Image (cartoon, rainbow, N blue to C red):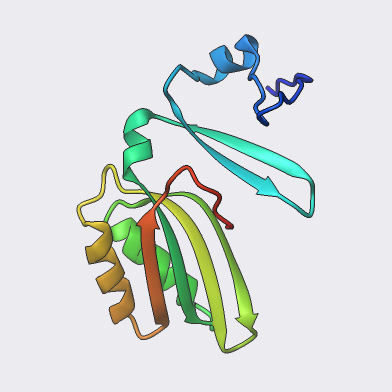
Length: 142
């Protein structure tokens, strides 16, 4: 089921999510939300996360060799350590040479630290560089 509403943006750029939608999605005061703006499509996506998830969310930027199976190796490492992918986008930078993946990941059930994951990813022969940082409330291009 999809719910929709028309809302106004206030002078500070805020919108109020109507109660019917908040209730249906379990959105409560103090909850962490991930917002993604798709500039080309002029769309905004909101994903509710729990307060605990907000603390364990990390933003990964992984530069890798662009070849078949490279992404599978990266995601297998995440799966092996119970790192949950919340959102992702991968693309070729130089076809057949280099690609990049932007991943929003939840470490709340993981058995590895973000730093440990970065080190393990960089040991893979297909990973050129892995950056992992805390997902804050600032503007992030993904």
